[in-house]
Every structure is written in C-alpha cells, then in structure tokens.
Amino acid sequence: MLKRIAVVSVLLVAILSFTACTGGSALPSVEEILEKTNQAMEGVTSLSCDIEMDMYMLATTGTEDVQEMDEVNAELALSGTMDVENRQMQMEVDLGYDYADLLSSSTESSISMDMGMALYMLDGWAYIMIDSPMTGEIWEKYEVPEETIQQQEELMGESLDPAGMQALLTEISQVTVESTENINGVDCYVLHITLDENKLWQKIEQEAQALGEEMPEDADVEALLEVVQGISIKQWIAKDTYHIMAFQMGLDIELSAEDMGYAEGMDAVKIDASFDALFYDYNQPVDIVLPEGAENAIDASSMYGDYTYSMTLADEANSEAFDVDMALWDAMYEQDVYELTPGGTVGPGYSSSVYLIDGITQLDVAPYLYSYLEAIYTLDEYGWVIAAEAVPGGKWDGLTYTEEYGWVE
Image (cartoon, rainbow, N blue to C red; front, side, top):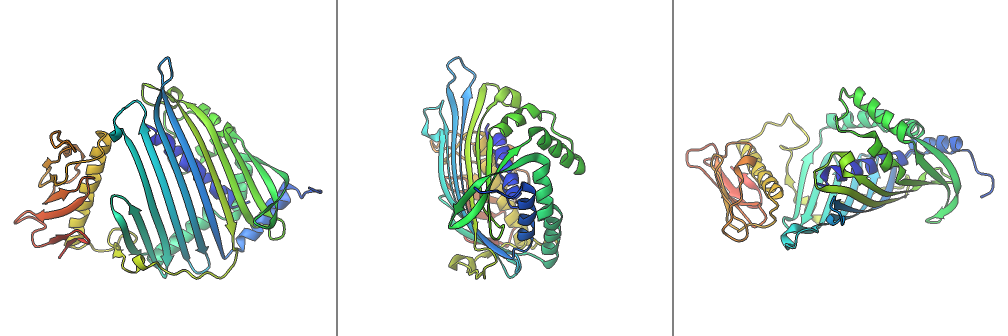
C-alpha cells in the first residue's frame, strides 16, 4: 500500500542528490558560487562519499479515531569511492528495514530485515554482492562491454554534466547564500535551496513529453505541492576549491490518501526522512581491491550486461529457476505470507504443492507463474529454490541442478 509513495519519495531523493552535485563577511553571489562550483566539478577525477538516509512512514485509517495502520522504518548507510578517470568504483551499503501491520496482532504481519550490498567496477567487470538472512552472502559478476561503457558515459555527459545540473538547479528552485560553516575542517559557503513547486511540475511535464510519455491520469500537482513544501535542502561548497563538501535534505510531509488515489480505508500517509551526504578526497589516487568473496563470484554475464550473449541450455534453465523464485515472492507478498513449510514443490507445467507454515493451508502459486515449467523445483521456508529435478525427456533432461550454481551441463 505504501509502495508507490515509497518509490516516489526515493526517486525524489535521488533527483535532488544528483542536483546537489552541481552546485559571514561579504559573501559571493549565488551566480559566482555556482559557476565556480561547476568549473571545479568538471575537473574532478575521483572522490569519496559517505551517505546516510533515514525514512519513517506511517499510514492511518479513515476511521473516526484515526487508527495507525501501517508503519515502515528504513535506514541506509553507504560509503563509496569513484575513480572517474579510470572507470573504477567501489560501494558498500547497509540497509535496515522494518514493516508492521499495526492493525494485525499476528507477528507474521511484520517484517524486519537487515541487508548488506556491495558494488565494485574494476577492469571492465561489475561485481555485485547481496548479503541477507535468506540468501547469505552471494557474489555475482558480469563483464561490461566497452561499447556499453561508452554509451553510458555519453548518456551521463548529456544529462548529468555540471552545466546541465546548474540549469536544472536554477530551473526548479531558488538558491541563496545563507552563511559560512566549517565541515570536516574545510571552510564552506552554505547554500539554502528552496524548490519552486510550479517550476518543478513544469519540468516533470517537459521531461515526460520529451520521452514521448503521458503524465499518469491520477497525477496530482496539489500532492506534489505538499511534498515540495515539506522539503528543506542545504549544500556546503568549499571556499578554496569550490568542491561540494556536503548535502543535506529533510522531508516532513503528510499526504492525503484520497488526493493521491490510494486504496479505500487509508486516510493519510506521514513521511519523515533525512538524507545526509559528505564528499571528500577529491582528485586523490584510488586503489580499489576486490574483497575475497568477489574473486570467486558467479559469472552472470549471460543475464546482464552484454545482451548479444548466446545463452546455453543451462542459462535458459537457470532463467526458469529465477522465474520460479520471483513467482513465489509475488505469491507470498500478495497473499500476505512470510514463511512456508519447507519442501514445497512447483512444476512441471503450472502445478504446485506449496503450504504455509501451518502445513495445512495451501499457497496459490499458479497465477504468478509466467512460463511452462520443465522441472520440479523444491523450495525452502522462504520460497527460494534449493533443489530441482528435470522432467525425464523434457527440455532440461541431461542437466544437473546444484544449490551453489543452479543448472549446469
């Protein structure tokens, strides 16, 4: 129920954080600071950053006593280094997430999860790690073709260059020089950024038209105005180098569910969020070393990156196994289920024998399967495939399924 609002909020944070990277006694003018900042950022070859984000969301019912309905708490901590000149990057992320259905007394209606993630780009390869209670630590890698890298760089150069960021900043907001302050031992100018909701809405419409897309019928400018009015933004620019040293955003809003077009029974959604970023080590030498787990990462090049790759029979079978995982997650989410009886099976065709933790109630999986299955997949208590057996004479006959690598020839 909160999914759409959460996505909009995260996207808005992302847009504003990108915008941040553009830009006492008598203070220089805003125009002078922004111009020099753009010039300084154009010459950046490397930098590091630490980012923290906290988000709290609470949905209330439309009843007379305004009961609390759903509650979400999320915390994210990110640290990373980018070597722009040599196309290298490392990023480590810790994510904590808590969801509670406050109208339900069942503990199954609450979710609490801590995850770790990592992304490394090195020597034309991308390494991705996910560490969760359900999967443990899993590393995958895929080769990024030179052509793909060039296309991405061209796209970034067209849309996210410093000049473009300055233009966007001035198009959608008003910027004032507030004061001076020391951040991490660096004397900085403090900029206060006030979004102009009408200009922002016009910009969103222009971008949609440029992409040949229509604004959603339920899009509501009034809801956007409420969001914008609840946003506070600051930016710290180094006096000597004009590099961006810090960015801070606060979000404090309450949205009417009716105005936003959300489900009947919800009255309002309150969101409190903070986003803090520190930038440092500009243009310093970078030495990125892969962690031990990344060196043994599963090569997933067939599924990502180079789409001209010719998939093997094992690759096609693993794609089917992945679809089974996604179908189970969709089925569990939609039916408000969080744990299963281990040993349930799915396939062949669209058949399934999956039960809830009580061992009696069956989980309806068939509507979420998008392809005819060629194997019998066995599941653990969280809906993950842990074993599979090909149907004799079927498409995957002759392949073997391993828990570590999936289907292999």
